[in-house]
Image 1 (cartoon, rainbow, N blue to C red):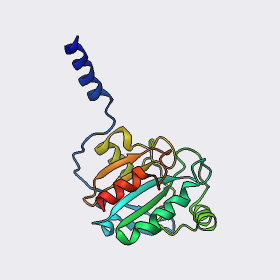
Image 2 (image 1 turned 30 degrees about the horizontal axis):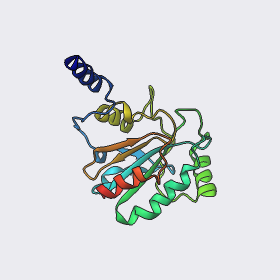
Image 3 (image 1 turned 135 degrees about the horizontal axis):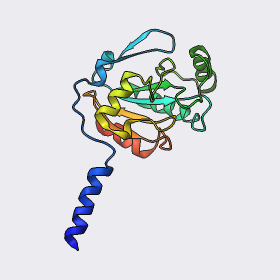
Image 4 (image 1 turned 135 degrees about the vertical axis):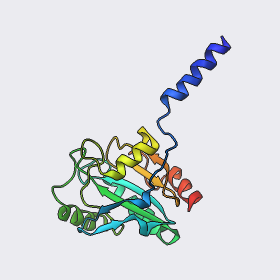
Amino acid sequence: MKKTLLIILTLSIFFFNNSRAGDYKKVFFDFNIESISGETINFEKYKDKVILIVNTASYCGFTKQYEELQELWDKYKSKGLIVLGVPSNSFNQEKKDNKEVKKFCEVNFNITFPLSSITEVKGENVHELFKWAAENHGKSAIPKWNFHKILINKQGKIEDTYASFTKPMSKKIINKIESIL
């Protein structure tokens, strides 16, 4: 009986673990993304920083998380945190163009942290950054909805991921950020 239970537990851990240690042939700093204004954001300039990547959307029930993302940015940017908003229409809840998104974020939430252009975060046309995240961290790195969070450590590897329900200023995220800054 004990042996059977041990086998079942071992198999459960093996089959149901959503994250994995990646091979990391590339790290976060090897990528770039287009900014909301059209320039290239070269992630190499973020070396030795901690980065919180969040796929965002203007028409989502979680959109108010922009407030806490800005609060997180204001509190920790001087200590080495980068908050990177990645507007996405992967879940059909984003505005039509970058100009509208930028205005929405500035007018409604006074966003000053970096924003990318509207980017696919899952599916056939997924941006290479999100493909890399899934390949190196497993299913937990794939956004299941808007305001999914991926935390990158100073080595450019995925430290942790957080579901949409986890607020940016939650103790869970704050404690992890403070421990790796």
